Amino acid sequence: MEDAAERTDEVIAREAGTGEWVLLSYRLPREPSTPRIGIWRKLKRLGVAYLADGLVALPADARTREHLEWIADEVTELGGTAGIWLAHPATTPQERQLAASMAAARAAEYTQVIEQATRATGQEETVRRSTARRLRAELRRIGRRDYFPPPQRHAAHAAVDALIDQNTSEEERKEQRR
Image (cartoon, rainbow, N blue to C red; front, side, top):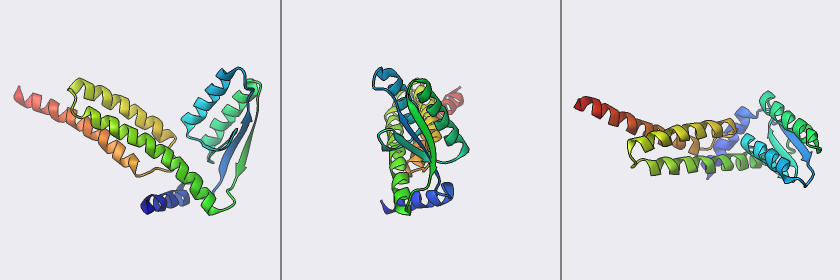
């Protein structure tokens, strides 16, 4: 566990260097619930850290700020209120905790990819190809919201690569038989 904490510290120092975070504070009417669910899904796709009810954070850069600004505009259009803030955590341990929680969420997603790739390993070629294609797309989606890469990232990519390599090896064997 100490390795993961050290890796998270390294990533914070390297990627979030200034320690600046972009925050979205928002409130939507309770009814109808469909718009709230839509906003929640968009925030989940971005990989935000939930600080409190109606308050989310992402490491600040032009892309994350723009995404949260779009969501703030959408919240306003839906009859809610929203504001964008730039902030620095008061202490380094607070920032580490925030980064660690985001890394843990991505680690769980990568673990699911590893499990799915492992289950597909013994399947027939068409199933492996289909699974590999789907998992590659999932890795791209996870990668877009992976601000503090956990060790499971490499393992997930390796598991999908092994699935693809298994397909290639089988194709090569078929060619050699011809």
